[in-house]
Length: 329
Ligand SMILES: O=C(O)CCC(=O)c1ccccc1C(=O)O
Ligand SMILES: [Mg+2]
Image (cartoon, rainbow, N blue to C red; front, side):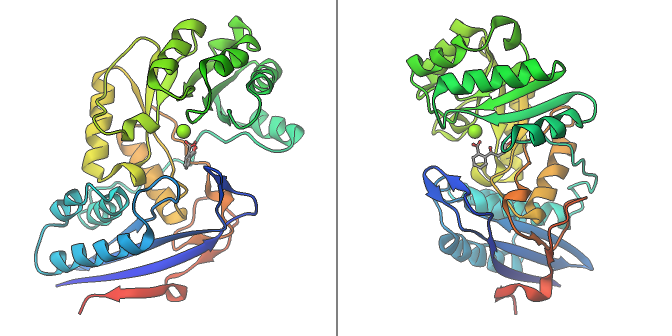
């Protein structure tokens, strides 16, 4: 016996969450819950506006279609993998499948690289309180690159045991990236673990790494058509955002290729709800236990869904309060 339910959610975001120049007022997505032989499995399908090619309505149609096939006896692993053109659908269905089959371990670490923003005094206190190896993430490229350089230097100087990941999301020209580097003293640069996609093109980002000695990481590039994982001088890591990438099998393949090439693989959020985020934390603990994931996005939302992120005080919306949009017969 199999049963499937699809829910649709719309979670209010904190004011002022802006993604690729558009304000995100609510985070909309789907949850699937599957039942088979007394076991259950959940998955989240949440295309991210501005990043995903598919939207929630398209995803919903695909999910209904995929789950109908599963109800008729198809393997969900195969169904999920077939949705490679709709990565959010492939990822969410494969998570539900992995939970149902008992493949996705429950253990979860809440350790992730905190995103640095807001009041500097609060930020210093928060970073100062980080346990062990202090690792945090700073978004750059939103304002003047010189200001980014000064800001990053100030943080690294204030906290001598801090290491930073930076993320420029392909926003700099080579000239702007030089403006940044000019204001980060060479002796501070080794504490920048990597900067994600500093420049507008991959070639310019490589040039930035050569010129500055600061390592880079691929994020957007990992989702470019024809991308292959390859070791190169100056490249430290690849960032994997499963909701934008595809099935768990596809993510596992990228992770093994990265590890084989001596690169770090970093699991990162696409602003999923607490249900998806806790699954990402479990996936990170399972498949990339040595890499701190980039999952500090829960506080952009005003509520959690179904499963609580340990220690979060945000209210939790439970199953009876969710809108059911499809149910198997
Ligand atoms: O990676 C993280 O630490 C947090 C997630 C994050 O940065 C992000 C989340 C959604 C969309 C784009 C990005 C980004 O890499 O800029
Ligand atoms: Mg990025």
